[in-house]
Length: 170
Image 1 (spheres, rainbow, N blue to C red):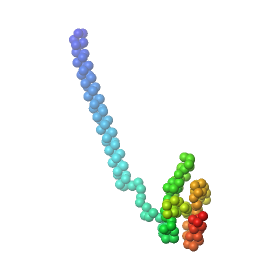
Image 2: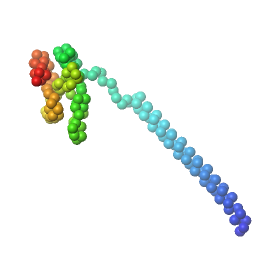
Image 3: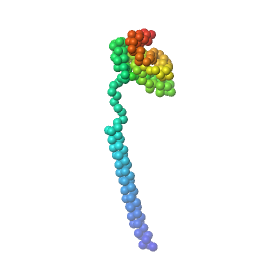
Image 4: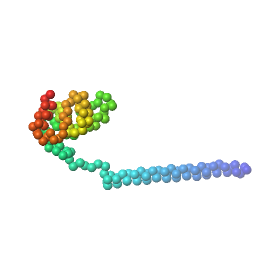
């Protein structure tokens, strides 16, 4: 019995050493597995980006006849006004209350700014009456005039210019 008691510290030390080595091996294998998985995910992501892409480059900033309208507006109203196409409402409006912030995500066809870059008129080509009403409500609350119409008004350029001038002269 005394012999067993004398060997107990050695047995315990050997057992503890084996457990420690096993723990080190276990932790090392976990780290290797995590790096392998992480590397695989990164490799898969890079492969996806190369083959599938995330975004596609648009062919042009303008759709349909927007470029023609933009150039016409520039020639007609600059240098007294700056024409900014496809502008987001949040570029010139900020909400008084946080619950309306989501409404400012909307882009409008054109913003017409004075020489000091203060918004003078919002032009939006849309046939969506509900969206037009909301746009009018938002802009009117800030004192900004809004012209919502279809792009077909551009066919008669004199009417188009006269309508815009009537908003800018107010």
